[in-house]
Amino acid sequence: MTAGPWKMESQRAYFGKALIDLGRRNPNVVVVGADTTESIKTIDFGKSFPDRFFQLGIAEPNMISVAAGLAAAGKIPFAATYSVFGSAHTYNVIRQNVAYTNLNVKIFCSHAGLTVGPDGATHQMNEDIALMRGIPRMTVLVPADGPETAKCVDAAAAMKGPVYCRFSRTNVPTVTSAADDFAIGRARVVRDGSDVTLIGCGLMVARCLEAADALKRAGIQARVINLSTAKPLDIATIDRAARETGGIVTAEEHTVVHGIGAAVASAIAGNHPVPIAMVGVQDVFGESGEAEELLRKYGLTAEKIVDGAHDVMKRRDRKR
Amino acid sequence: MVDVSEELIASLKKKAVTLRKHIIRMTHNVQSGHPGGSMSAADIVTALYFHILRVDPKNPTWPDRDRFVLSKGHACPVWYAALAERGFFPVDELLTFRKLNSRLQGHPELGTTPGVENAAGAEGQGLSFSVGLALAARMDHKPWRVYCILGDGEQDVGQTWEAAMSSSKYGLDNLTAFIDRNGIQQEGRTEDIMPLEPLAEKWEAFNWHVLTIDGHDFRQILAAIEEAHRTKGRPTAVLSRTVKGKGVSFMENKIKYHGAATSDEELKLALAELDAQEAAI
Image 1 (cartoon, rainbow over the protein chains, first blue to last red):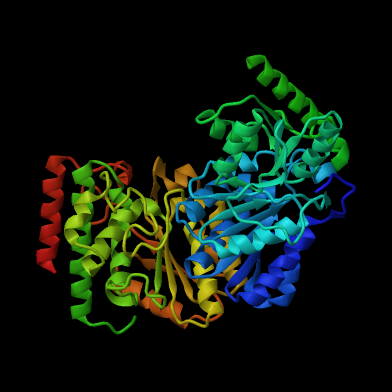
Image 2: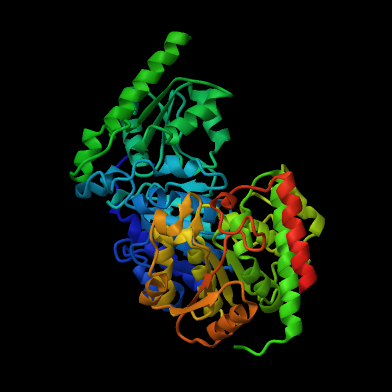
């Protein structure tokens, strides 16, 4: 896999289509929505399967509990909305009605992170990975692009138990292909390298690949890992990267407080601690702006990942 | 009034006294838990578990069973007592309530206690959960019904009204909600904490079929359920006027017994009162 230019595609479009395909195969799949169904493309499922689609209005706590009730009666409900509503606004409902009950509810949220854009900080959910990772029994998915979003739909439906999946409003570079294998709980090494490891999730995987290209021009071979499952963490793959490359940069469109960077850091701390740098939102709220402008302003760029790589390699080599 | 036999009423009354004795013993044994709101709901729970619900204690997850959802999770002592008396697990187990390694958690946990259908504790989620169940039953053309008991304190919670709206939107006539209107919540009288009245009119305004009954009169409880079953196209809310701590004179209408167990001395007095009630039936 080489860095861009990639096709820019909508994760929501892949999500909506995957849901319909799944609905055709599995009559137990139902969808609940909260007045965002056109935007996140679940409306198309509603048109295909009107009896299995429930528009519940701007009432996300109710939506999550209704999904839990449907799951308790044997359905596989997908509860989908924007990530700020599907995680933070409904946190204790998810905790008590979905995770504590270990019910088969699949929460799929778009509009994660800064790239929501002009809507501003109220809608830019940079804390949902942290929130959802903290809940026992929760599986947390962060697909890198459209094709992987579709795979998350199928994999979430195939597993038993609660799932939270977050993706972007903005079109993102398609860095995976339908043929790539995907499994919940498995981090994928998308480029091999032995000098440093770049671990990204969501749209930051593309930026990790760009950073790896830039590093290559400087003679540095960076390993790139697509961490599409934020929980449970693929500790074996992360550990091996720490051992074999000796330094890690994480990149996420999320706060560095309890995001995938913190998860990776705590995973390697016990076995093979190596220098780590975290590219992400630095414990601040976002603001209005275009997606690319925001990523630049808040330091979610390939350049910052490159800087982080040089930084961890310097720190590692000082120790040697 | 439905035509019910004196024998049925007498047996339900006796069972309700038994449940209240369990509630007193369970909460006394661990010196915690919520006896007041368990006792106010005891007659409704008794009517459901010992006359209405189609459930199978030998097969608690029988797919076609009726679903009972306790939204006011703190009142789980009455639920556990009913399940034990109905044969879902041994009556002896009731005294493990709230103790380490028990199947009877301080608030209901799904999957642990045979017969428990939902997790509750944080208020205001149970009716929404019931909506999901009722939608699933209807989708599958199943005749099983959903009964949910809500506290009146839970009427403060916004999600309760989100659930109320969605129930009537989908015309869930297979869903019956009992509101245990005992008038007291943790810190005081409901009308002081957050005025609820006119409560029946609120549920009517949300397009529910609303009945107001004495929640300690079995004839009225059974008649309300029968009317709910007859009502088509709308869910039914049974606004049940009850007494917090019902059945033990010194506990009745006392805010303290929302979340306080009896002392050793009070235990004796309470059980003596309940014994006398049983003898008089």
